Amino acid sequence: MNVLIIGSGGREHALAWKIKQSQEVKRLFIAPGNAGTMTLGQNLPLEVNDMAQLRAACIEQDIQLVVVGPEQPLVNGIVDFFRNDAMLKDIAIIGPSASAARLEGSKAFAKDFMAEFGIPTAGFIRVNLNNIDEGIDFLRNAKPPFVLKADGLAAGKGVLIIEEREEAEAELSAMLRGKFGKASETVVIEEFLKGIELSVFVLTDGQHYKMLPSAKDYKRIGENDTGLNTGGMGAVSPVPFADRHFMDKVRQRIIEPTIGGIAARGMDYRGFIFFGLMNVNGDPYVIEYNVRLGDPEAECILPRIKGDFAQLLLACHEGRLQEVKTELDDRHAVTFIMASGGYPGDFAKGKTITGLQDVEDCHLFHSGTSICVENGNIKTAGGRVLALTALDYSIQEARTKALSNLSRISFEGAYYRRDIGLDLIKWHYI
Ligand code: AMP
Ligand code: GLY
View 1 (cartoon, rainbow, N blue to C red):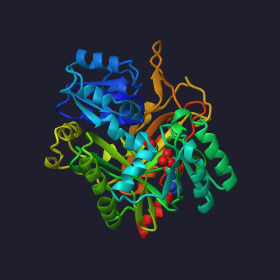
View 2 (spheres, rainbow, N blue to C red; view 1 turned 180 degrees about the vertical axis):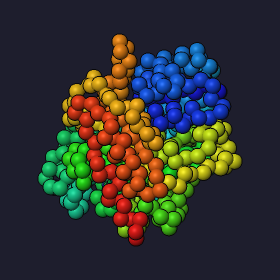
View 3 (spheres, rainbow, N blue to C red; view 1 turned 180 degrees about the horizontal axis):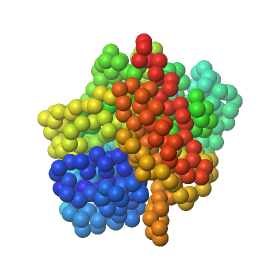
View 4 (spheres, helix red, strand yellow; view 1 turned 90 degrees about the vertical axis):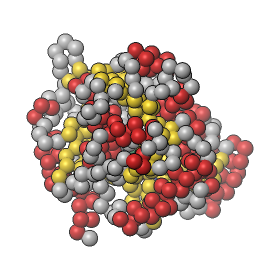
């Protein structure tokens, strides 16, 4: 079978690496990919939201399986586009339809879905310019901090957590008046949930689901969770505090009602669900749904999944998920992101990366890299540049292995958090 992976980050490199191991896979394409994915297959210089170009590539390369990495093409309706095209309709495309992708693409839609199916989440109100007074009342009756969310996709910047009520009221007004463009024409105001976050992943065919490994990601740029939010600076899997008892609650209260809701509404959903959860004193609440794998979570969890991943994805598309057994590597995976200096603010690109060939006994995934055509050097091409994952029998050993490998890689301005997983080590002893 020929496979196309859409996207260009560490998540897509990890997907390409995992899928490439399948005996069934003949040719592998990544659109647009990066300097890492080109060692596994052929990069196609296409834009992830350009459906006409992707269509032509699928026909030309006789693609049978498509895996969509990022959310934007899913929210734009790439799955519907494939299903409704005579030439593409038999391709197994992994991801939800546009209407189901609203679980990520519209926070108000996701909240209404959770309310309808009794899925635990923070109390909320949806506000637009017509009921701004109700929003102000909600803020006056709530305790700080205040959580304001742009309804639509806002490049990961649409969530504001504010301490002062007056500032929250002013931000609410700014958001409704276009601070995030159309994305904040509707705003969801939520209660603040105090707890510890984790990410839970499943693959669903719309009726059944397979649990994938869980992960904790580290969103802030600075050590000890300080500084600006990023796409994610590292991840750990499994999550030590997500024990069997807690995960039973996650399954019963969250995953099963979500799949039940998808089936009850007749949504066409054959893809990944990423549950962003808060553990509040041992009880799970949904912070958000994402309709894809996370980045860097994918780089952390895919190395822990055993077996033929391409077969698993095909079974998902054909509604046969319950027939497939998945096994996990029970070692601990720790992923560190090496980023460009200045990220998540402005940063330079085009810095030569050295030491990549010295990495041993780790998975090195490229996030933002490119290759220099003249001399074959690998250069930085994004904020997050590399994702390095080590597996070992404890978080501590995996950390040590990853850190010793990271010290062999360098480029001007390289930055990484050294504390990934450090806060979780104590859970081994409780
Ligand atoms: P989101 O874009 O929905 O993932 O939100 C970004 C981050 O804001 C989350 O990862 C949480 O850390 C935080 N957050 C969002 N909603 C809440 C909430 N209701 N209570 C506490 N923290 C939240
Ligand atoms: N690491 C969080 C995300 O991919 O959304």
